[in-house]
Length: 231
Image (cartoon, rainbow, N blue to C red):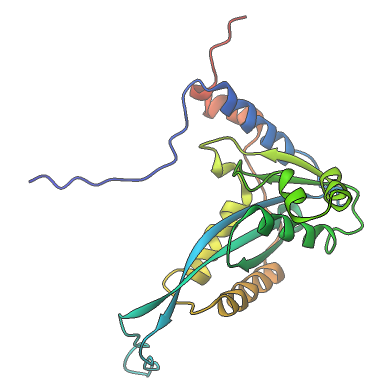
């Protein structure tokens, strides 16, 4: 019997004008010089299964690693929200129990009234998830306040099958590898504490993101996704 390996990959579409338009829109945003008065923010999110230990673990010694029993108790789920300002070398992680429109609007409002309170406009790069909408603010706040938030956000959505264009996804990948993967978190408070410690450490040591892909590069390297010109 032949043993066949499967490799999961982001397979871009072929000759897809909508994908191209969305991709170039985001690449155009990333190509702009740093403007602290109008920051570019990227956001993404991911669910996490909360797990409680059923038996006390055995601490590590000089002879063996920490021993954790293979059994665990499911304790519900949580949702990680990742926000990052790539050119400023800043990222922040928050954890909520759910990932509704209201959850997203509350997280955005927290940033707009906190870190970005003095900014007239912010540029937001995110995916097309149905919770990441202008209408979400109207579900969470009264109309005047909702409108004040919407006026300040310039939305740029990554295209379908183009999640790799979202720098926040790269940050989430790092968080998963360095902080979340292989660990058990019994509750949201513990997960938030560990995620905050991770972001504080990375913010203190890592510089801004140097995004290399430009529109001209995409037109060469990803030419198969561009429709053939009729002119």
